[in-house]
Each structure stands twice: as structure tokens, then as C-alpha cells.
Image 1 (cartoon, one colour):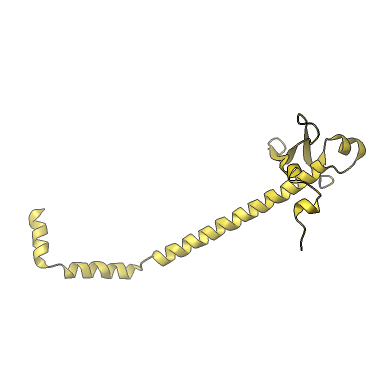
Image 2 (cartoon, rainbow, N blue to C red):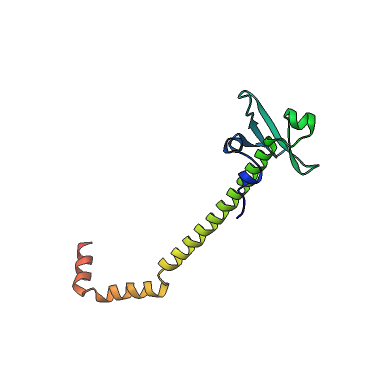
Length: 137
């Protein structure tokens, strides 16, 4: 049985929910603001370090001691969840488009059949109905 992301990265639901994803418009990079668990007025900025290909945090544990904090794990798990949601959205949009195309294909009446329907409707009309129509219009 495969472990959940929460179990795999040793996070609680509260820790995962503490991270919010943002895009820095100047650098066009992803960053997370993660609320502190010990101080409700403190938030930590977690950014992607392109040199080391990993998230880095500005908290005391990470900046002074070089430790991997739960803020970086939370940001990483949130990024994984975000990317999975985007893949799921793309798959759903593709499936909807395919189903719509199939529906339209099934509902489409071939042109020849439509022309035959019109011809048979005209030929089945009685001459009197035509003369009545033209007399009244």
C-alpha cells in the first residue's frame, strides 16, 4: 500500500493547509507563504531555489541551522497537489471535449437525409395546401 503525501512527508492536515501558493510576477516564480504553527502572527516565505532545485524557507531552523523545516515540506506537498490538480483538470477538459464531439457526431443527421426529408415533406403536401398558402400570402 502506498503512503499518502501526508504520511510520506510527516505533515499534519493543519501544516498542509498552512501554505498558500503565489506567483511572483516580477520573477515569474512560485512561492508559498506558510503560517507559523507556534506564532499566529508570523508567516514564512518559501521560495524555489533554482541553484539547488529545492524549496528554501526563511524560518530560523532553515536559515540558521540549515535544517529542512516543515514549511518547505508543506510547500513541496502543496506544489505536488497543485500540479496533480492541473493534470486532472486537463484530463477532464479533454474527456469533456471528446464526449461533446461524440455527442455532436451522434446527433448529426447526414445532409442527404435532410434533403430527402425536405423533398418528401414537399411532395406529400397536397396541391390545395400550396394554393391556399399562396392565396393567403
